[in-house]
Every structure is written in structure tokens, then in C-alpha cells.
Image (cartoon, rainbow, N blue to C red; front, top):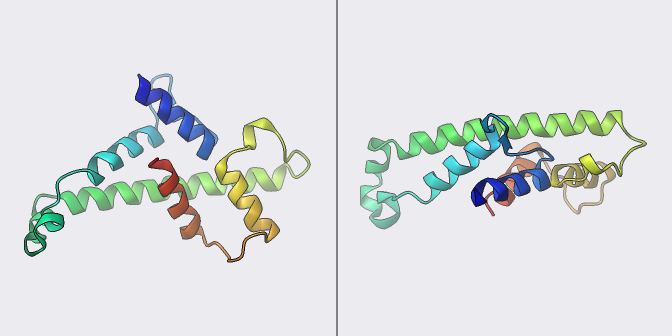
Length: 133
């Protein structure tokens, strides 16, 4: 129960939506749990570099790649939704339901307040990093 509450808080702060839905875990909650399990799983290549091929045989790399592809498409969708809502509601920048991390990063990118230009992949990498903590 505590993990569900923490996932919801993190998801609302980062994405602006809940990780858990009324009928069970949402896509973000499920993916974040799966990602944490995979990143903490035993990897032969980490301990014995000459046995890294066993990670391919056990399917660890395949599961990690599949999870990241799914998470990549989810973040693409979330970023696109935020860009659309940002362009529709220019006058309502301070509404409570849109003050989340994705909105702030996109606003900083749009206003040119960052020293470097962030690409879509940069934003997704930041979202993955922040969603793990």
C-alpha cells in the first residue's frame, strides 16, 4: 500500500497523472515496478564480465529492452500530451493540474531558459531518471 501511494505521488509530480488507477495498477506504475525489478536483478555480466553472454541467454537483456521500449512510447505520449495542452492553454499557465515536472521542463525548453537545447530523448532520459527515485 505504501508503494502504491509513493508511486502515485511521484507520478503526479513528474507526469501529472496517477500511477495507480481505480481498477488496478496503471501503465506507469506497472512499468516503474518492472524497471526497478529488472535493474536490481542479478546480472552475470556485472559480476563476471566474461559471462555476460549468460544475460542474453537468461533473457535479462530482452526484458530490459522490452521494458524500455514500452516506457519510451509512454513518455513520448506523455510529452506530446503536455505539448498539446501547453499550446492550447497559453493563458492558463499556472493552473494546478498542469504544474508538474514535464510541464516545467517543456516550458523551460520553449522559453529558451536552458543553456543547451534538450531533445525529445534528453527529456525522456530525465523522466526515467526522476521516476526511479
